[in-house]
Length: 485
Image 1 (cartoon, rainbow, N blue to C red):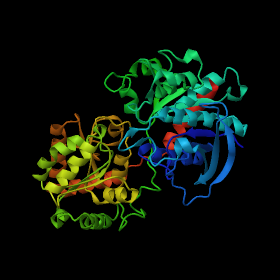
Image 2: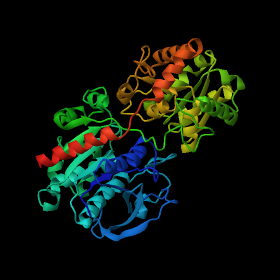
Image 3: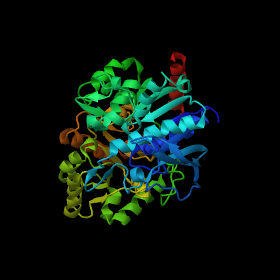
Image 4: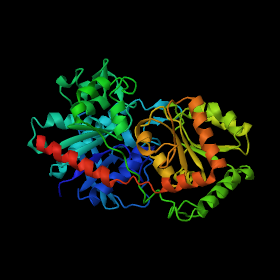
């Protein structure tokens, strides 16, 4: 087996996905291989994993893991996706569940710490089983954050890990994997890791902090977010240790997978289109109006789309607050997502109140997300913070002009109106007043200056956020780490 970069992640599209992490892990390893760096992915084998179109084989039937008790083992299944090997860690009592992290009605699974500590320890055991040290181990978010810590301490006793670098990527600092201190006792780290510079966090065991503390490099998913999390406002209590590690902190913008998100050949669209022929976008809009039973008058008025988790981070409450005002602008609103039941109920209430003008689907399906991107005229992202964001990249490629907060990756990917190079609308504060003002500007341009809006659409569709540049930046980080070891 050649030396690879191993990506460790709790989601990987098309097998598992609850948000942007799954999309990134479905695209980045493939792009890494195309840029000359062999890669593989390690992820849990969930009960609801999508494997119907793939042949899996049992690679390791009884992999010793030893957590939370000595004899425990994992089974490892293998498949490939677009040439990338994927290894799935299977242990039924941990991963054979309908949802990845929580029960929507009961909250987070009580044993999430044990589940993902087990996953990380199994990943270490699997890589050792292969017998070839990885070039690097690249862990993503709190569910995989223990890996850099394990490898940091294993280097002291195991020559196998001596030249393997570790990178930890933070996709969302707010989700930290914070658990009771008692779980530290059997996690496999030495006692010295329990301190303020290690995994201890106000008396609790913080899994995400272990990645920050012990990885050879820490990355975030956009340059702006890397700067933001060094501040108290966005640091989620971890800004102190992040400032301590600032020399090894990098902001690398996520890419978009245009093999999946491309209106020129998207299999989910009723009609394809491109920047040179936008007629299909109009047909996509007409089809969605019919599908949702919207007022036919909206064919000649802007439709505003929202796709995202219905949580405070994404600003769904801000959108809910201004929907009555939006109705006075004579626009339509379509929304897709799930999250906080209060926000879900409110958007459905608006749907009842403004029938034919507001449509909402609670849940998520990939095909509907694609159709909504193509059919909408303007795309709403009133996020309170946004580490990177992928949906605005998709919106740009689909000629759906984003209206977004000046936060994180949104600032890095949208050129703000007014201006000759504008590709979208940016507002400063995530509040109803600024958001409504920005929407008003966009609707006014759409209505009074259709030529200007059309030119903005063309500029948006020609933007390109491929993974190639990001891959080269990651490969450079792996190289720098190996020179330090």
